[in-house]
Amino acid sequence: QSALTQPASVSGSPGQSLIISCTGTSSDVGDYNYVSWYQQHPGKAPKLMIYDVSNRPSGVSNRFSGSKSGNTASLTISGLQAEDEADYYCGSYSSSITLVFGTGTKVTVL
Amino acid sequence: QLQLQESGPGLVKPSETLSLTCTVSGGSISRSTYYWGWIRQPPGKGLEWIGSVFYTGDTYFNPSLKRHVTMSVDTSKNQFSLKLNSVTAADTAIFYCATFSQGSVANYWGQGSLVIVSS
Image 1 (spheres, helix red, strand yellow):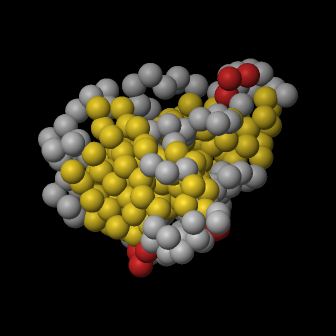
Image 2 (cartoon, each protein chain N blue to C red):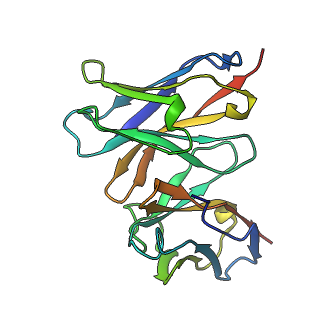
Image 3 (cartoon, helix red, strand yellow):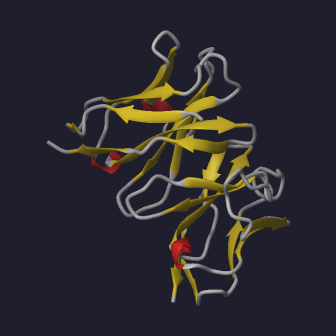
């Protein structure tokens, strides 16, 4: 089971919107609505930002939203802020491995 | 709100067994619908799910690590543990304990414990 594919890095200016993609297969992202997204600041533990494709846990800003089409899930960050600069990982339930993570994306706020 | 805290040696010799414990507070490990599990992250690299255990002892492991992993739950201490045997330098990583809900969502995470495999 290979990791889900994410772009290595994306960047944007404050106030802009960013989209991070997460591409899997029909055995994970494509077959289950169990895609989650995690934010990780340097030296910190990851934090759940989105679960079940598009649901936000309590306390997570509504600037973060998720969606899915076929084998690709996406995380959108609207109104980009300096504090959003971090690494982001997607995760998906998989029929073969239970949980597979993405390769990770570094978000830079210019 | 659940809180998780990893503990264990920070240095393990090659070919030996890595042992970590996660202590849960803010809720009972046996009254929860969560699975309890471990994720690791080699320095500067991505996340890898290791496995999960339910309070009944049911376990699920990453197939790539299954031969080397043991997990267990101690409900009397509200703890669960990880053992990874025959470690090599490639097992050097930050190990996180976490809760998992339906769909393998990692809801709560410990702060992480760096384990270095070196002689």
